[in-house]
Structure formats: C-alpha cells, structure tokens
Length: 84
Picture 1 (tube, rainbow, N blue to C red):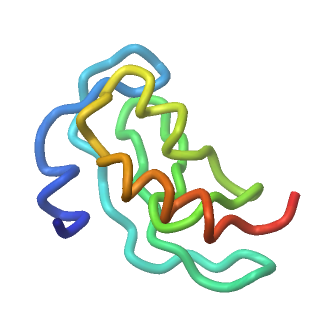
Picture 2 (cartoon, rainbow, N blue to C red; picture 1 turned 90 degrees about the horizontal axis):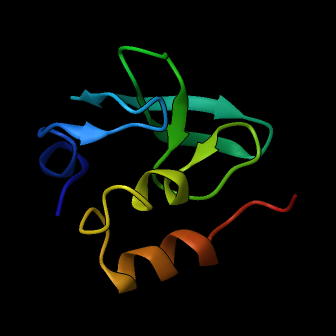
Picture 3 (cartoon, rainbow, N blue to C red; picture 1 turned 180 degrees about the horizontal axis):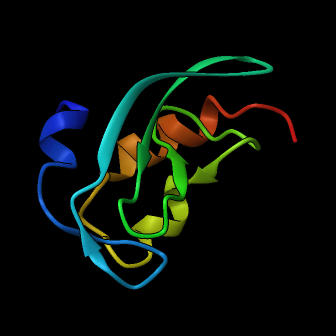
C-alpha cells in the first residue's frame, strides 16, 4: 500500500492529537533521502521508509495506530535501519 493511502486518514500522533499527517517525499539525512510525515499540530517529523536517528520512528506511532503497518512492513522498516 502506498504511503498516501496509509496516511490519508486521521491517526493519533505522539502529541495525543488525531491528525492527518503531511507527507514529505524527500528529506535528506547523513545517509540519504527519506520519505517522512509531519504532524500539523506538534510539527514532529517521522521517518516512514526506514528507521533513521535524524527523525522520530514509525514505531512510536504504531503503539497507538497498530494497524498502520503489517508485520512484514514493520520488519522491512527495521531491517533497513540506519546505524545508531
């Protein structure tokens, strides 16, 4: 499923607000470019393609939005993580 479909509905952010996240298709970090989402309330950025120390991780959102990623998608996300 595309990122647009996953994040077009309201989700609970770590700031405890239900929001529709803004998708930012390309933000650069020391290891490359990422697709990130941004909360319109707290403005926190979350890396949604791979785990990156420059941004919050999707794992924090999965605690409140368990159906957001399948088990396979979570494994793929974590297996492509940048070193910490």
